[in-house]
Image (tube, rainbow over all chains, first blue to last red; front, top):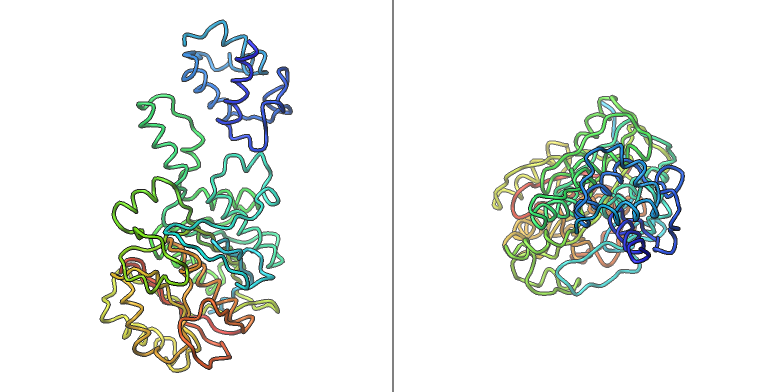
Length: 85
Length: 354
């Protein structure tokens, strides 16, 4: 699970072009959206595509994203349970 | 009609030109066929949250516009008019490559929404909170001139008091690769100081952003008056000299009263003949100035030409590096600019001391 969390952090930094950030700067329980890491709705679309492309997970209901994308912990738990690749 | 003045300037180019306290005193000499801009510290001007979605061209445009606005002493403008020949090619390349690489699957929005040509103008407006007229001209080698002409006409008719006008073009890897394939970029590396002696086809590609605040009121710090501007989609090489004379006469200026001519020579043996027609005839004994050996060629490189002309007129200094011939000229009151790219999209501009 730790490897998956590190991979997620690195992917998020790269996909969302979070300049000057490293995986160490993101804590596993940091809130990703709003006041936390400051991600927004366009980032949410990027993350949905990343789940599909990297882990074969299609989010049918975008409302699910709110809970899944809350933190690295919640994302990693959802991916571990639902991944098809 | 009101007169139009350049009240502030900023150019980001392959030289350290964004700092107006210097004037081409320390030049970077390149030995290349593609040259990139000297980047300002973008983080000093753009919040990180906004900057992370901006490709280089957008950052260049936003920072150049902010610096120009700062120099003008204004907080905002009535209009933002941008010229770009290639638009945001990096993001275009990114999302088109993603379509191909991922077999039209897994497409993400960011690169696409930032890839449109008017992204730079839009981002500048967002940064400034400017809800006024916002227009982007895309017209190859006269993209910047088209923007300048729009601004000039609006200011002359007093439809606006202050307009931010600029040109911006960035380099992208794929764009460079395909321009090399069709020999629009020289196949060999060229030293900056030997560009015009190269006698080969193609040019040295560059990138940059040039932004200006134009007003219809002169102020103490004004650089120059933009007297006239004309663009031509096609112009025969044999008639370029006559057209220059006609253009000057139309504006009641005799060719002999021009103090300098700023030319867009890019070292392409197939197309520099246009410039040679001017430098070997009417403007033979007039101070000739060139700049693409230090900026590279890009569709809006002429914005750097305007920056150069405006700074020469204001400072009355002609940097050694841009002299194409040796004359005794020491006063620069009226300057003619001429530019074309690959024999198409020509422009003449007259700047005058104010």
